[in-house]
Length: 298
Image (cartoon, rainbow, N blue to C red):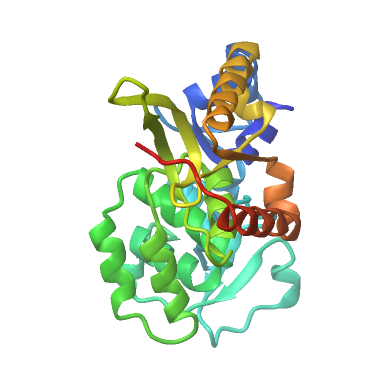
């Protein structure tokens, strides 16, 4: 895949190191020169639509919002929007021909909700948690925390939320976790959290009791339900990067399985676009492990 396609799979924003695990230095530099990706800051890259989205919002005297705003703030998203997401006041009349290239949203914004034509970080989080589907909202919240947004501030933003989807907003905020590595993993976790009886945590170091005492480290897993002994891996060639990484992952998976852990591997395409299939697999795995003893973590 091209650098731009890899960047889209990473959530629309990524570090240079992340891109170099998937492509080459020459390809990244060529994509920059061609305008296929843009540099947000030193070592941070984004889709070129970020700047174009601000221009589209300005043309409508509107404000960049939702996932378009999240990308502006350097937060990775489930999927970059096909068109810039632009907010205008609820009562403003906008001619249909002027909105064909944007996804128009009607939001009532206060002056302190807007920073240079983009919803503020706080307002962007509130809007994403209220208006996006659960999995997409969790991906944004995870990324915001990963990039330094205060967890305490996030909880304060949703504590007194009222109106549509207020309960879901608090649920997403309570589940947001900066340990999630990327939107791929966040979306898989969102699906898993919707399966009754399954309780997964991101980026868990799996240890088991050692025969002579102490513990043995088996590896770090993307998502783990320690009670049921289930490991979920957000798995694709892009995240392996090369043969050495693939070999390391194979050894890690084998160590989990040899010590009684059930390892389930999911592709990016299924997690993003075939969620019922993923959910059915997780439900069957939960049912199987409920009827069988799980390994005892150290």
